Each structure stands twice: as C-alpha cells, then as structure tokens.
Amino acid sequence: MAEAQFQEVIAVDYDKLFQAITKYEDYPQFVSGCSGVKVERKGPGQARVAYDINMIKDISYTLDHKEDREKGTLEWSLVASDFIKKNNGAWKIKKLAGGKCDVNYSIEIEFKIPVPGMILNRLVKSSLPAMVKGFVKRAEAL
Image 1 (spheres, rainbow, N blue to C red):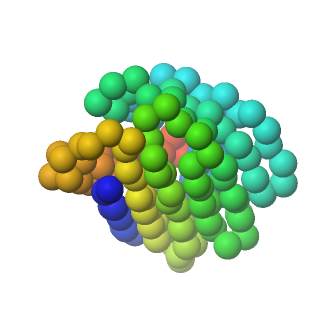
Image 2 (cartoon, rainbow, N blue to C red):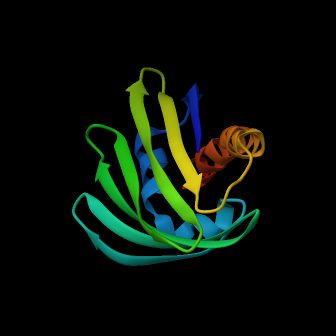
Image 3 (cartoon, one colour):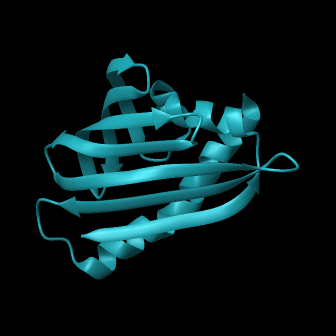
C-alpha cells in the first residue's frame, strides 16, 4: 500500500479550483493518464464516477465522492475496480487572503497484485505535484 500527501499554498481562485476538481467529466482533457470518465450519478454533495486510467497498465475503477464546497473538502472511496484494492483520499482547500489557497491532497492506494512498495511509493509521490498543478492550471483557465 502507498500513501502520499501534497500540501502547498497556491495563488488560485478557490471557487474555480473547486469547480475544476468536481467537474470529473473534464479530467481526460488535463489529467495525465486519464483516458475516460463517466459520471454514473451526481447529487447534492455526492457523485459516483467511473474512471479509466493508464498507471502501469490500463485500469478501471469507480469512486464515491463526497463534496463540501463550504468546507473546501472532497473525499473519495473505492467502490469497485479490476485492479485496485483500496483507493481513498481527499482534497482539502482553505481560502486564504490575496487570492491564494492552502491546498492539501492525500491518497491511500493499494493494488490487488503485489507491487513493490518502493516502486508504488515513487509512482504515487512523484506524480502528485504535477497532478495538483494540472488542476490549478485548469482552474486558471475557467
């Protein structure tokens, strides 16, 4: 199992960042490795989303998301996957003065087949800063 966390203060509009994060169907346009997204159901403060990504190999999985725009949180948990055993995580965004946000992203992931911890940790941790910056760039474009 791998766990990783990214935290940084970033100059980005809070509402636009939250919008970029919760507009799941747009992920294939700017999230590296994401080839498909299907929002299976969406309601106030929640969504069930199926993803197709390429991470080591082509992987499909479905997550339940809990969104709270007022608190600046988005949490997810794994519903089903052909390859992933565990995928839990959260975005925590705090609005700061001067058009900045304190952005915290955390993930805990485990695959159904053995993957050496060193490789898994490097894969997860090295991709986090680029992935978060992709969401920030998307928010800036909104």
